[in-house]
Image 1 (cartoon, rainbow, N blue to C red):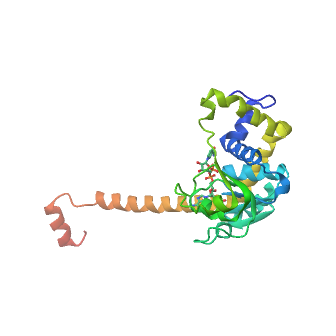
Image 2 (cartoon, helix red, strand yellow):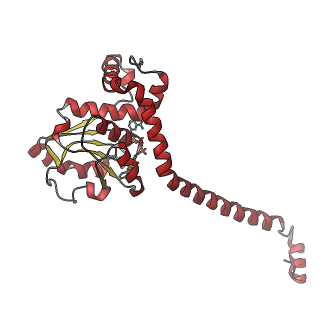
Image 3 (tube, helix red, strand yellow):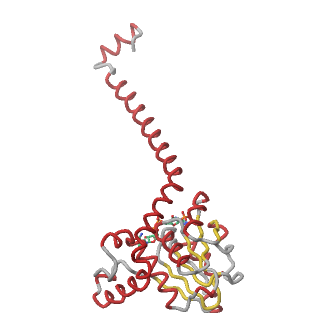
Length: 251
Ligand SMILES: NC(=O)c1ccc[n+]([C@@H]2O[C@H](COP(=O)([O-])OP(=O)(O)OC[C@H]3O[C@@H](n4cnc5c(N)ncnc54)[C@H](OP(=O)(O)O)[C@@H]3O)[C@@H](O)[C@H]2O)c1
C-alpha cells in the first residue's frame, strides 16, 4: 500500500496493522452515522493491541469512550488512553437469554467476537453500528436477531488484511489513513511510542510476574530432568551389578 502523504515509514510501522484496523473501525462507524454527540462508544478487548489504539483514537476524536477489559490492572492504562468508563467483561455483556436490554452504546468496536459480541448487541442504541474486527474470544456468534429487527442495528465486518491486495481498495484505504491521521501525522508515532511505554510500565509488572513464574517452572523442570539423568547414569549396567548392589546396600 502506498504511504499516504505526510506519513513516513517509521510512523507507518508505529501505526502497524493494529492501528490500521482500529482506524478502519472508527471510519466504518462514522460512515454509518456515528458522531461524538451520539453517545458512548464501547471498545471491547480494550487493553489489547487493536483495542488500545481504538480507545486512544476515539478519545482523541472527541468520543465518550468506554473500555471493556478483563484486566483490572489495565484500568490506569485505559484511563490514560482516554477511556471515560471502564467495564469488566461481565459488566459489558447482557445477561444470557436477554436479547434486548436498555439502550446504551451509540457504537462499538469489537475486537473479541464470540460471546462478547453476542453480549454487546442487546445494548446497542437504535440504529447504532458495531464494527467487528476480531475473534480473540471465539468464532461463533449465536446471537438473537431481535436487536437487528427491533432496533435496526448494523454489524460491519472489517477485512483489512487483504485490502491492499485489491487495487480498487488501495486508493480509499490510503485516503482513509490520510484523513484520519493527517491531523496527527507528526504526533502519532510519538503517541504510540508513549502508549507502548505506558503499557510496558503498567502491564510490565504483571508480565514480569509471569516471566518469573515461567523461569521458576523451567528451573524446576531442569532440576527434575537433572535428577532423572543422574539416576539413569547410576543405573546398574546389568543384572549382576544390580544383584551386587542389592547385596551391599549401595543401590
Ligand atoms: N493486531 C492486528 O494487526 C489485527 C489486525 C486485524 C485484526 N486483528 C484481530 O483483532 C483481534 C484483536 O487483536 P489484537 O492484536 O488486539 O489482540 P490482543 O492484543 O491479543 O488483544 C485481544 C484482547 O481481547 C480480549 N480477549 C482475549 N480473549 C478474550 C476472551 N476469551 N473473552 C473476552 N475478551 C478476550 C483481551 O482484552 P482485555 O485484556 O482488555 O480483556 C485481549 O487483550 C484479534 O482477533 C486479531 O486477530 C488484529
